Length: 114
Length: 109
Image (cartoon, rainbow over all chains, first blue to last red; front, side, top):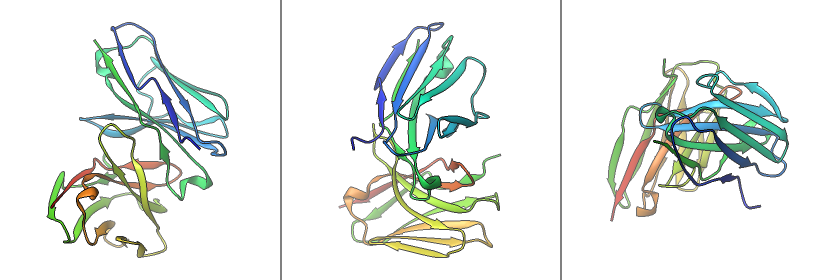
């Protein structure tokens, strides 16, 4: 398995533009997580899905953020409109068995909003 | 309110010596705890975990200790190697994982 695959690796966009981050979880994993890492707030959970259903989106900063998981092999995180304070590294992770054996993280997408 | 805290931002040890990384938590509902290692430009990698019903779990050079009464866990790396130099995150799970801010470990040759 190639692991959790995120795209793009880097994204630079102008304030006000729409940004879409993509994630392909590990096949067979039934949970998917979106985390954001910043210097100020560390690694914070934005949203997670179990069996493609959003379970907890309490970490989503505001309505500009949305996430979907249309099937077991794909998820997107969309920011519209983007703002400079959204600049961060966004990680996608997946797990099985409730995450007892940990999450498998992707390499992240470094987003810069100018 | 930060539920998982790693109070030491950095730690430096000599190769061959023991590295001890610490983590404190506040939520009694956490049912297991995990440690991850992170290299630059990569995502965190799962290292070792421990259930709340245990007080120790060992995997090779890595041992995690859990003190529930003190709401404290620690990761011991013995012996430390230069390749262990990375950021180490503690995480606590109650349906979802909450991460500490990380400790940067530097192992000097």
